[in-house]
Amino acid sequence: MPFTTEIHPGVCATAPAQTQGFVLNHSMLRVKDPVVALDFYTRVLGLRVLRKLDFEEMSFSLYFLAHPQLGQTVPDESGERMAHTFEQRGILELTHNWGTETKDDFSYHNGNAQPQGFGHICFSVPDLDAAVQWFDENQVQYVKRPDQGKMKDVAFIKDPDGYWIEIVEAARLKRLGMPASG
Image 1: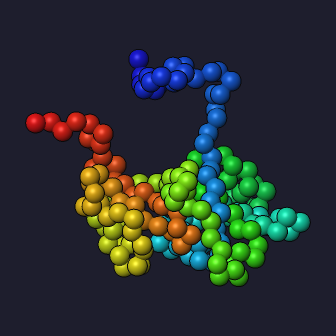
Image 2: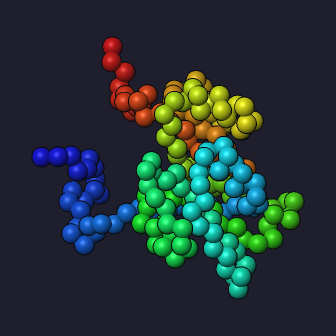
């Protein structure tokens, strides 16, 4: 029988039939300045903007970013691209409330300051050492480098709004959370 879920208190062992086809589509972060945030997420992390939506009556914009899958064709037509965007996995939505970029003392709670709440988003990279070198070349701010702290081979960087981003190389994490063999 193929793996479906680990069993822990509170875990429903079998997904209800009504949830068949549900997909975690996106997570949203509020950003102070979209120019600064878009530069970071598109240049430093390589995401592409699939769609931007402006809501003039409510004074905010949404930017949907993703790493399109290799060989995947993204529709040119805006309506089809919007539908395509909401069919994907792993989308990052950046929300910009207009005017925040002009307020010097404005910032969003990053979720890690007290009281803690939201923690981080995570990017898996093919080569952690190469990613760290790239981040260093781009003066990215670290919370923790891969060789620091008790959890090795995991980095945490900050985006321009102070949100934490975990950086992992999947192959290095096979024993994460397991007791050290001795």
